[in-house]
Structure formats: C-alpha cells, structure tokens
Image (cartoon, rainbow, N blue to C red):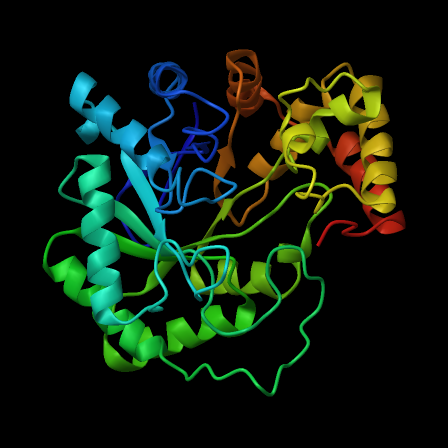
Length: 346
C-alpha cells in the first residue's frame, strides 16, 4: 500500500480508501466485516461512510452502513487502526427528509454527530464532512450552474464552521471536510477559516473518474493552491469503468441492474468513451478497472481514492490498482480520448 497524509495534519492515510455505501443493502453485515478485514490486512487504513448510507437512501435502511462498521469495531477492537470519515447530509430534500430537515445549524450538527457516533460505536470521527451544500448549485450529475433567484439559502459558512469547531473542542471530531462542493463554496469556507481563525476544510470528496474529470477545472487549482486534498469518489463510475456493461457480463445484482435510475454514467457519450478506454486497457494487457483506478491514484491533487465493491474479487482487484503505474504512452492515449469526448458524465 502507498500512503499520503491528510492535508495540514500528521495523519497518515492509505492512498486507497474503503468506500462502504453498499453495506446494509447490497451487502450483508458479514460481507462488510469481511471487506474491512481484508482491506486492513492489505494496508488500507482509511474508511469512509455517511449517516445516510446505504444508497439508495431509505427510511428502512438509513444508518445501517455505519452500524456495520460499529459492530466490526466492537468485534475486532480495531478502531485505533482506522482513520474514519463520515458525513452529515446537506440541504434537506425529499431524498433525505427521513433523516433530518433542519439543515446545518449547531443543533442539527450535534444531533447528527451524536447519532452517528452511537451507530459507529466510537467516541470520535477523524474526518467529518458536509455531504453536499445547502445552497442550490449543480451537484450530482448536473453539468452547469444555473442560478436560481428563488433560492432562499442565506450565507452561513461562518455559522457552520463555528458549529463544527464546537464539536472539535468537545473531542467528537478531529478534522473537517467538504463533499460535492464547488470552487466558490470551497473558497468561502477557506475565507471564513482564515479571517476568523476557524477550523479549515482539509479535504473535498467529489466525483472523479476517466469519464468525469470536471474537478480538473477550477477545483484542481483550489485543491493544490489551498492544500485541500481530493477524496475521489465513484472512480469506477458505478461500475461502468469495469467494462462489464459494455461486455454484457453484468450480473443481476450489479448496481445499475438493480438501480437503473442511477444513470449518471450511462449516456451514449459515456458508453463510447468507456469503449475507447477499454481498448486502451486491453491493448496494454490490463483490465479497465486497473487502468481507471491507477489513473485516479496518479493525480497530484488526489489524497485518497475511494473504492467500493460488492464482491471480494472486485475489492481485491481495486486495491491491487495501487501497484499499477500508467506509462506516459498510456496517459497520452487516455488524453486523446478525453480531448475527443471530454467529461461525458458530469
């Protein structure tokens, strides 16, 4: 395994982070435990969850993922071996109304954090992240920002940071991060931190893959100049970048087979780009999964690459990607496809 440090800390994390959002829905508790056992044995010390997991979110399953992690901590006593990240939901929506409708005020953050700590059977979370912004902006597959003059959101970056600071002082969290955030929001957080001596966001968890490189626009510069590490999620684009859907070998329990509404990475352009990337991988005697993950691992703004799997063989292949280095020739071919079909899946 290779390791990096969370920006502006001395916390060492594995370059591969174990994503968990299928546990409690597509995966059982026993399977989640087996994945954590294997990952830790392979040197993966960074796990990511969220209060709303598993996905798709529902009142019946909410919080199950974190409970699975918590029961593993209790069974194994491995809490101190793991750097643990979790997330609080952002703007209230129909999708998360069963969790909370109160936004990101101090009381909401305290209630959410206490409930998550109980599920996780731990006294603290190493990295606590805002899952998505409260304001109306382009997240989750929306390509461009379209301003909505009816958005009633009021600037509360200062309030949110003060609330999180209280949780840090209480010893419940160590550091804070963002998720599904944009350049403007990231810089507003940084501005408030610097001007008011408040805790700073040290990471941003956004989608990043061969078919979604939107982060390389404004956010890559923000990341590198402000030292905010990217925790890349969906590096396999919901399994699309395994090539199994193009090859017609996806099982009945594959993510997009079970949940076809998750079509973020399934456009005609995404499929064509994936087809071209598959050929590059096969021409160089590697799997598309290996090439896709290795590409993310090599980016200078990536602190850790969040992989997820429903099967152990997928997990092993994903973790093994840390041993793959893409040559300049392969990168040149990847860039040629990107130039022809840039960011087909926003």
